[in-house]
Amino acid sequence: MAFFKKFLQKISNDDSSKGSKGAPTETAYFGTVKADPNFNAENDAAKLKKAIETKGVDEATIVEVLAKRSNAQRQRVKAAYQQSTGKPLADALKKALKSDFEEVVLALLMTPPEYDAFEMKRAMTGLGTSEAVLTEILGTRSNKEITALKNTFKEVYGEMLEEDITCEVKGHLETTLVALCKATRSEDRNIDDGVAKSDAKALFEAGENRIGTVCSVLIDILTNRSEAQLGKILQYYGQLSKDGLAKDLEGELHGSFEDCLMTLVKSAWNKPAYFAEKLQLAMKGLGTNTDTLTRIIVSRSEIDLLKIIQEYKRMYGKTLQEDIMKETSGDYEKILLALCGTQ
Image 1 (cartoon, rainbow, N blue to C red):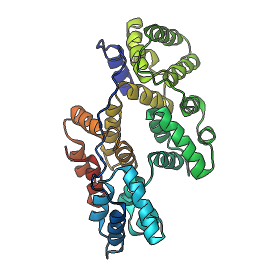
Image 2 (tube, one colour):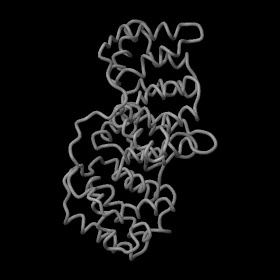
Image 3 (cartoon, rainbow, N blue to C red):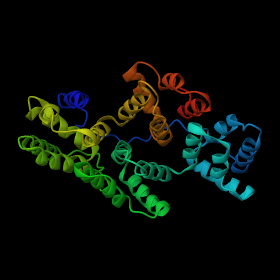
């Protein structure tokens, strides 16, 4: 709860103009992986075939081809490989590779909705449920991305995502994740000042009551309001309460539900910073959470990984690449660094 308190106090007490105007439409590209201008699917398929069949496997070529092509180009390479060999590229690579390097390569071969669906399914398979993964994906994707994820989940696994979530998760977290699954959250960049004030007041008044009320109000606001609107709500809340939202909620939020609300708040305030923190935590302490490292770097490589790298340096005083080199090794390290690009 300590970090939740610190973070929300920062937001509640922030009197900057962030969130006071509609966010500008960003047209610049903030991914680190770009389409190869000299792309040839047949040539790439032939290179991969040779790399796979080479004694000991030519991992360097696999990295060079897959990490330096856009996802759309990789899909064409998959088709070209299938056509020339009669076998799926993913199957061939799965046999040839192993461990974390294999995980990254197979992730790169999936379309973004396929990869999100794969991660969601894996999070709900076996003993226990990785609620953090469900929260990360549903809490940071756009309505369009969530809709594509749900459709792909149904196509690939023959199941409804909402139903699987309901079977695996209970309580306030279930309510929140199912609400996000609807993909109906406002994405309006313009801010309604009146609504922001009334929402802040609703949160404040709910805080005077018991946990059941405050949670239902929190869920409603955080899963329905746009990210721009949410920033303004948090600012107005800080004006109503001398302690700020964090202090008012201290002791009432716990575990996975708290983490879920944290994701929604952090993502609304600064999504690249949210992912930078997740990456740092994945590499902090004993051992490295390679699943998180792989998922974020692959899934954000054509969206905002450049911004995440910038936030990482700002927040931790060192580059993401430095920590990757310190915490990983071998071909896994090489492909992650290739995806991070050269800054």
